Length: 404
Image (cartoon, rainbow, N blue to C red):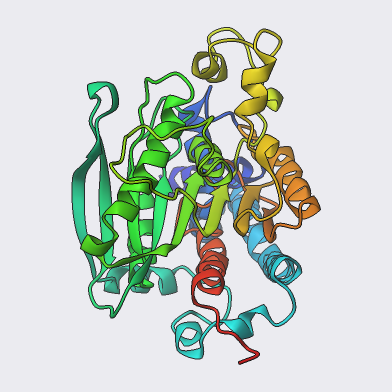
């Protein structure tokens, strides 16, 4: 019986380890397998612990198969941990390349001391931080009802803060037709940012609306936040928009077409409202929908109402790279290099176009990252990414004039 238990542990360890190194399953076609693979990749401790148990029990029961399987899982779990320091250095280099030498000195010392001073290399630190978070939350606030479709948002605020506060508007993913505000584990990300002193608005958009309805809804959310700035003690001149996957596409479009009469907001304001934002943070963004595999019945075909060869102008206008110009807000881009849903080529293309236009741009590449790479704040990559997101936002909103 002990041999059987050891073999079960060994098989589990080897399976988890192999899942973490296999090519990515499509999150659209095999969502359960993709989720299991994401967890196996982002939590290498699962393979390491089960591998250690298998090896120990295998030695006690003289089951060399269990020992071998356990060691396979243990070594595969160790693999990304060994690479993490090199990836941390590459991420630091990317921040310096995008923001300039000495960029961290432009963040006020008291703000900088509130951050961890190194990339997290453990799981317990983020867990302890999350357990201590104290934020004020208000859910399901109605901000618009286009075509009688109610749209709501969740607000996350710091418990204690003085003066006007910067805001972050979060746009969820889900291939334009799925998902919801604060969905999956991203509510913890909102709480994390609120604890850093931001007022976070996690918003809905129409999941059944043909383009450009979702974009109009996001723009409406930006207008609503600015119109209600006094109510939440928000500085309307310090607003960032953040999105993931389809939400990243909408966030980029909203930021890059601010006040563009071709793309109007989904709500009417009595007084003109400036739609511009001061920063953009996007994860695995589709930046040119012409690069997305478009076929009958696909999300892209449903969103735009046709295929690229049928409505090329609509595809061009719905691509964030078509709206890049000098003067756009600083943009932080995050992408896993093993993402099969949104190819890393999208982020490379976006970064190249932004830099060509002279826009402040940072691209963080995660070699083992899959679709949803930033979803787990207590996983392998989540704390690493959050480390740089915190500093990027602080650099944009709270930097000091070092020359004064």
